[in-house]
Image 1 (cartoon, helix red, strand yellow):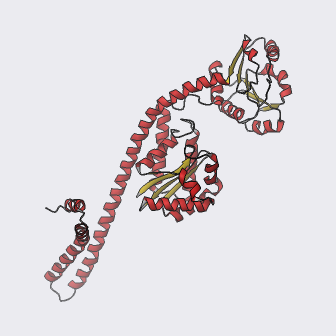
Image 2 (cartoon, helix red, strand yellow):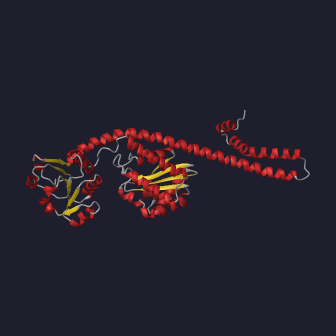
Image 3 (cartoon, rainbow, N blue to C red):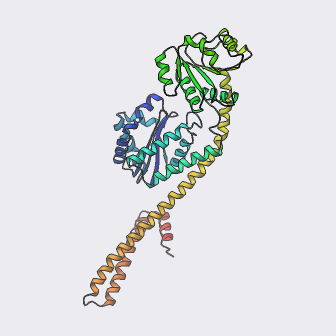
Length: 419
């Protein structure tokens, strides 16, 4: 029995290739059933995100044959030539596969080191495999151990504590400046991906109120609806600026949207209560001179990049400890798996021996009902039992001797305690 992890990710392939073999969550149950049938594995799970698609398998037999079957199945399922897929695939078996899976769950293999979202995605993959009936003892135990490792890494290291995106860094800075965000009012300018991430982080930190200003109201409303934010136009910013304790802007404008005069006017209305401002746009959305105002804390994207670089270095430092945890826990799992294999082998061997014994014993008992002497019956029973139990070892010894496999001969002599 082997554990196999095969996949494609942001390190091995561009998005144009990754998207070709991504799996739709709505059809994952069908895909898992197909996978079990076509690859002939005992258990399977599929993890599919924007940055990676990975298959986790428990299988019997030659791993090389499994690889060929996996490629053929991916080719057929996604209608993509094998030549497009194969160069980007990576393969891990047994402890390497276990180690890889744990590293993925801990964010050690992510595009952003230590990012936490992947753990939730892996838990979803686990639930989908359970629902599809493609998971049994080994895979279930592996996922549970993996979740435990991810929790241990988050608890015992600081790998996820430092902000490594401008959106996260913006919100972290705000948390340092304000003792609590619960009563803070935020004005977000723009409705693109960066502002959407900022809004998400603010919402998760239970910020008091969010207002989104955008050129296109419909786009802003689509984003604001999920977080209960108000929506205004860019033209309404001067009237709403005084209400904002925090202003974070990221638009595609070629000219500044927020000028020094607008902010001075807002500060007057606020009776010079400070405003924390973050300009994530390039070119700038907020005039550089705004930073000269006494009651404004203005940060640009360059300021945040310095913070991010420092935080990323901290994460790399913490990753060393995280890798050590993964290594230890993968050893623990493999030890359990080896014990399972040994137990299964012993059980199967004992069952086989007892079946042979019972079959021959039943025949001997029937013979005792006849006229044959008990001594002859016992002698025949002993001979047949001996021959039955000697057959497999004798065949193995003869085969090793004829093939010149001296190492195997030594091994067999040791197993059967042949002096």
